[in-house]
Length: 121
Image 1 (spheres, one colour):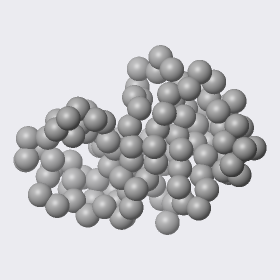
Image 2 (tube, one colour):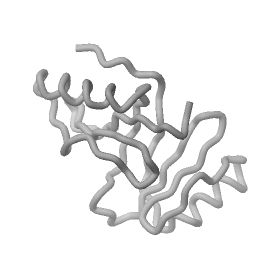
Image 3 (cartoon, one colour):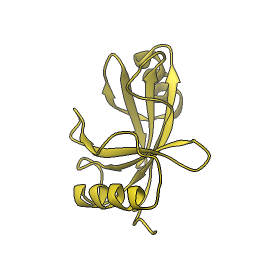
Image 4 (tube, one colour):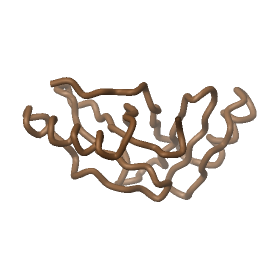
């Protein structure tokens, strides 16, 4: 079972205040602020992303992202994981930032996301 990962995508951490966290990483380390919403946000530097999830958010949990090159690759990965007995957390879905992804649990229960983001090369 090989899924063709393009590269690491992001690390998602929980924070009390999404905007404050994004500004801290921007001002302190030079990350560019990509998104700030009430419940999540993202900063990027050199194609590396940190995603901030507001504590108590029931939709997103801390996780890491694995980038693939197309929506079709997300769908193939979903099928591949299911065929191999890997627990997926729902079905692939389109997000408000136009990314498309699927969450799953690795054998140790860590949450990962296979993600296609048309806004990132």
